[in-house]
Image (cartoon, rainbow, N blue to C red; front, top):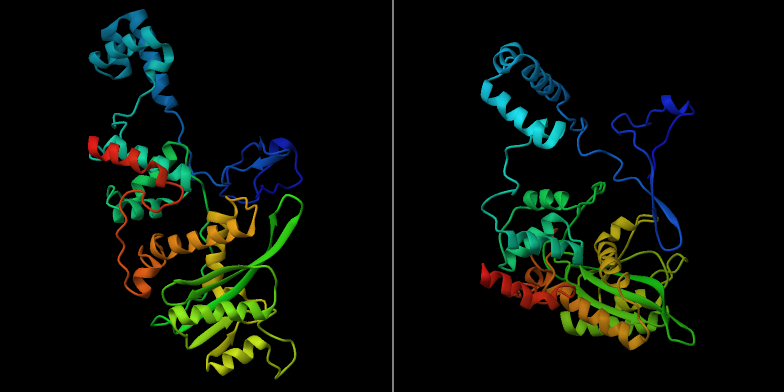
Length: 373
């Protein structure tokens, strides 16, 4: 989001937010257009680091006095040791005024105890998955790669130019059932268009998530928006995982009819099975937040990365991702366990980059690094 400025001359412009630093706009080139890169809007600190100009002037003055009046007189007037003055003169002769800038005495490594190969693994994971520091640390720990804190990872990403400023989402009201299969969330996302060469096929994705464990009960791609195929698919989910006590939907078709006391075929089926039908509040999608959060993950990790050219390819990709999401993807909301661990106690046994779609091809590279270390 760009900065707002008042209508003042260019030399008197001030940012509308007093905590923001006035900076020039940088335009970067995208696919056929230019976009404004605000660089996160806010600086990393309210007082940006500035060179120690006073110290540099003092050292330059000492060097000039030493050349004009001698070492002893210059050291006495400036108030420094002869050893320091000799050092300043030597660095000025070799590097000029740049040599008089005080360099940090801290080691270049972030922490001596962490080997270099760990940094390589962290950067590789970041570039191929774009996970945040907490997820990278949790995945590396539970997959027995290396245990490293998220603050170290954040610092490393910032130094390597892989960090991205973000604003935490505004927390809303949260709820959670006490046991699996007490409440399921169902929703329809779409339409999506599959390119078939000669035309496009319109499809909708139907998802079903358990409230307590975030376990993905089912995920299916449908070519129509009717209740009949959704009900047949829902019966298959009941056979595999049992029936929930409650099922939550939004107020859209085919779940709800906008006529009081009239049930849709979906509502009648739930009534026959003695499943309580819960509906979200009007214009309140966060009420059904468990499935909405899953749609966000599916969009960023599958739909934005794949180009499907057939219905079979799309269904195969969704089935593979459902297995990864339930049994191999750690959930930060659950305390970095998989949904399957919380749903039915399935143990998490992955090692290295196993079962991670975007990293599995680097498993041998990782094993070579870990063996050499």
